[in-house]
Length: 122
Image (cartoon, rainbow, N blue to C red):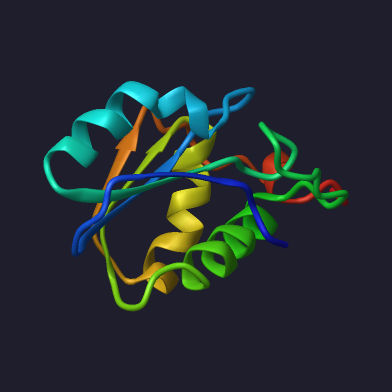
């Protein structure tokens, strides 16, 4: 699944931003501008079913992480310098960080990982 990305700035340092529930990549506009001004390439993603990204019928954290890895992998050659996840985005980041090759992961207001969010089957 390809996600919508709000991209700002350029440079060798890539920063990935993952919003919380009911947010979008636009939620990070002030942070994106600040980081871009510091010479970073900022990728603020709309997670599945948020912003302009299509919904995922499965709706699991792991599927959202797969979509993040797929989308960022198609845009970035090499590691991600920093990834920041807020709330739901932090849950997604826990499942995606290793595959993204993140040097530094930041989890803001990260909830406990709940089985109910992992799968709608049980």
